[in-house]
Amino acid sequence: MRFDAQTYRLSEAGKLGTIALGIGIVGIAGCVGAYFVDPKQFFYSYLTAFVFWTSIGLGGLFFSMIHHLVDATWSVVVRRIIETIAYSLPILLIFFIPVALGMSNLFQWSDSTQVASDHLLKSKSGYLNTGFFLIRTLVYFAIWTFLAVRLYRLSRKQDGGHDLSITTTWRKISAPGMILFALTTTFAAIDWIMSLDAHWYSTIFGAYYFAGAAMSLMAVTLILVIYLHKNNILRGTVTEEHYHDLSKLMFAFIVFWAYMAFSQYFLIWYANIPEETIWFKHRWEGSWKTITLIIVIGHFCLPFLMLITRAAKRSANFLLFVTFFMLTIHYIDLYWLIFPNLHHHGPHFSWVDLTSILAIGGPFIWYFWSKFTSGPIVPVGDPKLPASIKFVNQ
Image 1 (cartoon, one colour):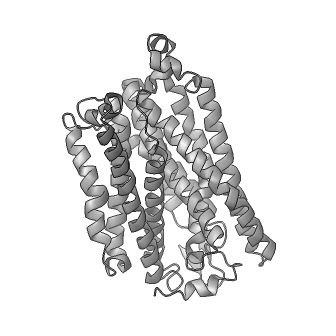
Image 2: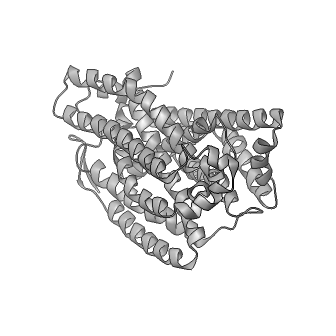
Image 3: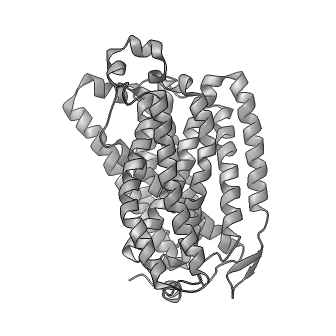
């Protein structure tokens, strides 16, 4: 890669996008084969990969809006990375198509025969039905697309010169956008994950999914910054001070995730209502018990200890390990939410899990990289950019 430090442009983008697209094509071919070998396993693996990559895009959209709402300075230097991740979110609608086609393999409530014989499913059929489910998904992506595209295009417009009206427009979009984001993310988590077991419900489930999304966004942002630094790009622009703040936010959302997870568990344990506790009981049977303990330790206990010190938050090599570790744990957490509905007594990890991750992740990264490298990789027109570069943690 070749970088112009004056214009903040990459004159040569490197091969990351091409490699990602190639890996994605291999993953798609693997998914096609998996569908014919074991369709049930394929659809569950694919759904897990879909909600994993969608969570990263949603994290980018959330952080883009919160940046504008609080008029942040320190994060200006990484804003282009984050808003481009959000801008890449709409292409995931294409990757929702296999989920839509596999609804009968995933969701009990999509089978009219089962609904007819189940009083609870029948009572929920006004909400949980195929047509309304697909309409809601289109509405979610329509809202996310509007917000992400509008914020990104205003940012690129600002590259041509600062205009105060752009800042005002950002806030006018982000304020109601944050409310819409909260509602759509919550209902998307309910539709795509919680409704796999339509007999169970949790009023905190949307916040649980959001916590993992925000944490994973911070992890991906750190990985991209460290990758750029290792290629001698943005050195002196993004500094260890920014590492520190990104790590603090990742640490905060790790704790927030733990709070949501514990709150969900504690309230259900305390109420001790059979139709609620059975969900956790399924995840305490057979080898699912091991996965449950891995998530408790790996999603909170270990990262809490690993990131609690100031030095850990400022070490690029150590953070690279922690971020990949957290993304892996985030995927395992989603796997734990989804797969007990298929494999009741323990996980059965499959090569289809990997091909599904590659099939969606490859094109997602390729699209992100092509947009990210098509212009300045920092918002050069933002008047707070010099202050952001000089930012120092107090």
